[in-house]
Image (cartoon, rainbow, N blue to C red; front, side, top):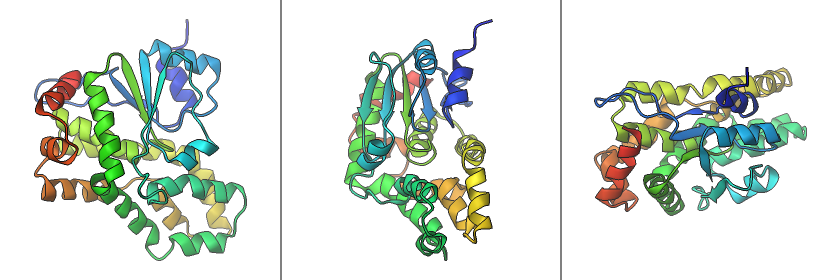
Length: 267
């Protein structure tokens, strides 16, 4: 029996999963439209072929230029790559610093220096600030506008990813799911599902960091996701715009017909 394409990609790419499937008042969200993922780096040919078999025609990379420089995507030539640096205005925002922390760890940087950068509640504050940036930064407005407009107009499947597929990607996915009518509890549960693959990817690193005297709790707040992070962004949306459709229209500048088309792709 031939390997299932989804299993093949999930075996090679952390946090690769379908955005659809959540319940809405109009039935389950359509699957196979959009996938989420960590970075698509060093993909073997059989994994690239599996992406094609899943119907993926577009990959949207939300990482910074520095992140992409160190670990560029490896894609077949017939899949279109779209780079949308949503944190271009704050390239050292918390979500973008995850890759830098991994690099520091791999290069055996001073544990004390890492502790000084993320300890005493700094890690959580960095991440909360990042989620505020998703809603407020001009670069985030531009990037997410292009992303959602492209999905509304797109044909074929798409993959949205950043470094770990949990923060920049997590915000985009939550917006899509809430727009489709999924319940907030289901959206949060799906958002938190990133933690299992993140623990599998970074668990040994966290244990080793702790064994060297590192603040593993602080580092966990950079490597994992927490409900309060998503709550931070959603609270700004409620205060500034009133809801997700209004955020898309008044915050990002999508036309009502584009918002309707975006929702239609999933319901």
